[in-house]
Every structure is written in C-alpha cells, then in structure tokens.
Length: 314
Image 1 (spheres, rainbow, N blue to C red):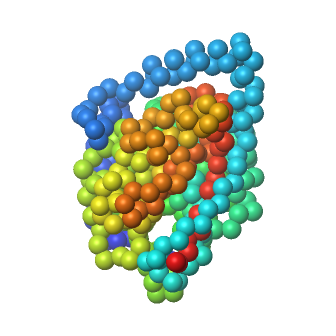
Image 2: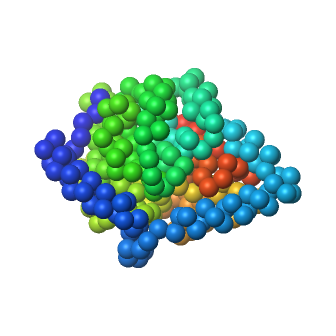
Image 3: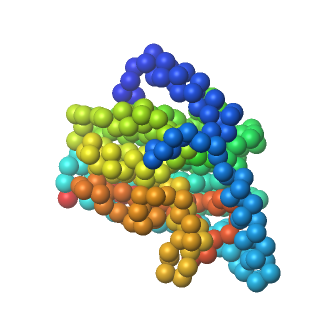
C-alpha cells in the first residue's frame, strides 16, 4: 500500500506549474544546472564527437565486441543493513532500474524483460532516461514502456522519476505506463502499519530547480529513500537524513578502461559516485550502471545491470 504525502489538489497545482516551466525549457533547448545558470544544450555536439569515436572503433575492429557487450545485461543483487529500518520492512526487496534507453538497440525491451521476468521484488524504482534522444518525439516509446510495465508491477508500487533524456510529456501517460511518476514529491509506503518514505525529484542535471531541494525537507519518518536521476542532490539528501539514495545517469561510464575507470562519466560530484555503492555521512547510495546505452550502442569494461536491493535491519 502507498499514499502520496501531498493531497491531490496540491499535487495537481504543483504539476501544472512544473509542466509549464519545463515545457518552455525543453522547447527552447535550455538546460538549467545546479552548479550554474541557464544555458543552451550542447548535446548535438557531443553526439557528433561520439560518431567520430564510433568510426575509430570500427576501423580497429572493436565496435562489434562493444555492441555485444551492450546487449548483455547483468543481474546485480546487494543486501543493505540499516539500524533504523522499520521491522515490517526487513527483507524488503527493491528492483532498481535506471537509464533503460529502451530505443537504443533493436529488441532491447525483450532483453530487459528476460533479465527481470523471474526476479522477486516488493517495489520497483526507476531513476530516469527511458529514450536515447534528449529531445524530439516521445510517442514511439509508449508501446515498449507499456510492454515492459507488465513485468515491473510490484505489490507496493512502481515509481519513476525523469532523467535528462526525458520529457515532461511523460507525466500524461502515468496510468498507461503503470508507473507513478514522482516530480518533486514524496510517497509513503505502508506495510503492517509501519511506514517508509520515498522522495523523487525532477532531473537535476538539465532541469534543476529549488523545488527539488525543497521536496527533500521531509521530517517525521524513521527511514527515507531518495530516488533521483543523478548524484547531484546527494549531499542535500544526506543533510536531510535520508538513509538510501538511488541514482543512475553515468552508465558507470559505459566505456571504461580495464580497471573500470570511465573515460566520461557526465557527473561532477566525485569519482566515488561513478557507479556502485558509496557512503555520504550516514547515508548509503547506489549509482546504477544502467541497463541501456546512450550516444552509441557499445559498452567496454562496464556491464549493464538491473539491480535488486534487499533491505535488512541490523
């Protein structure tokens, strides 16, 4: 069982303001960074550079190998212990999916489904980036998302946040997709009369606003989870006593040298946030390597993943 913290009328008003603001940014091609002001997106330049890199991979014979790597998704399972986890949630299992980029490879929806169809989980949390392009049409994504959603429905809900590749228009298709989109808002998960809180924000990488910070100012819960596309709000979440922070965005680098060091991570918070588990104060964080690919359909020394996180009391 779950319920939103804000009443329906307040959620509706907040959504209208958010959608109006973000629609302007998307249509004008602006990005708004936490570390700086408004600017034009440079995504098209980055894509051109990637095409040059892809050409080099082809002439060196590495492209085919990288393509095969991109189609190979790993199941990752971790157990995390928390002294303040309510007893009712001992053994609670979270399916964490990030950076699906469903249209990045032909038949990729089926590859994802094959990895999750036999998994057991209580809740599903998706931390953004559902398409490969950062702008343009979204309609072609509706069918594969509907198909995938049948396999990620969970007893305590399926919740999603937007990434920098996503559009505000996704908010119109929440019921059709089978996901509850969290836009700078929180939801209570209730089990056997006990509660945990999950807070989801809009993407802070390209669409940062103070509303994302304000929604983290939550009190009165024994255990809190933040689900945010990037690690950029981790310090704020730690200060507001969140216990678990789930994010993605980096793809773990997607293309790494042999010891797992990314050539590009697209984040500025520090190396420890590139992928996997990390700590910040008393908060535990996990940066997913993501299931899909972006820019070009290759991976090196950085396998794609879907993640099961098992919560335990300590």
